[in-house]
Length: 287
Image 1 (cartoon, rainbow, N blue to C red):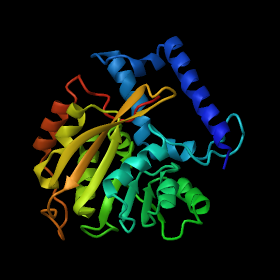
Image 2 (image 1 turned 180 degrees about the vertical axis):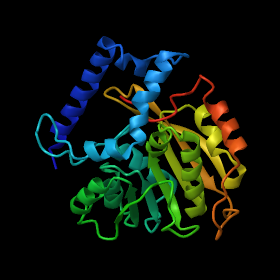
Image 3 (image 1 turned 45 degrees about the vertical axis):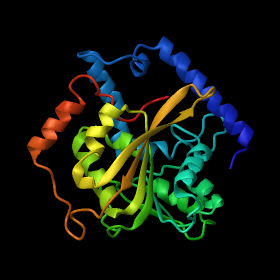
């Protein structure tokens, strides 16, 4: 594990370098401009689609840091693990026996921070096999925590009403970066709803605005209430991310049964509603 001071310095260098490159490069400036119809939309979708591609993540998690020339043991997208862990703790209120699922866990330090706070029943999943093997070694000292190679859109290994909390930091954003974003979002949220216990919380950290997320989250079949909060990040806390908090109000209507698949007509309408040339950038965001 690298020194904390070195890590902070490296993050600042990366953020500032990105901002400079984005100003200088037409292709990178796509990440900082409003979307319009035409080639800019197509280019943006091509850039973003890689975040739903398993091959991209398999390559990324086997890369070496260009400064230290060592494997990158940890990286937190969007917000620091400590800040998110404090937010999670404020909702769980010290219920250390809570079973917590972290889908698309990546190599974030969030599980380690939560573990040190006293939350031991952690289930970390990611569809990237090389990453999970790395985490099993890195976090081998965290007795009681589990790591599984698993797709967040298919949680059939877990029973209904099993988790007390599901903490998603950029996972839904990554799923919605792919070509099948509407279907992927529905499948993931359907599984989260099914495996979440009544009274449980699904917390999703996202850069996407509410108009790009509420149509997916506020389906009656999920049986949860949806709230909206925020977290700040960046060198000067100049970047704000939305935090969607979904609280399960009653058992999933299909508990014990195979989750239903919405008609193609419904998915087509939803896709037109959430894209329509206005919010195409629903997926993962570069910073």
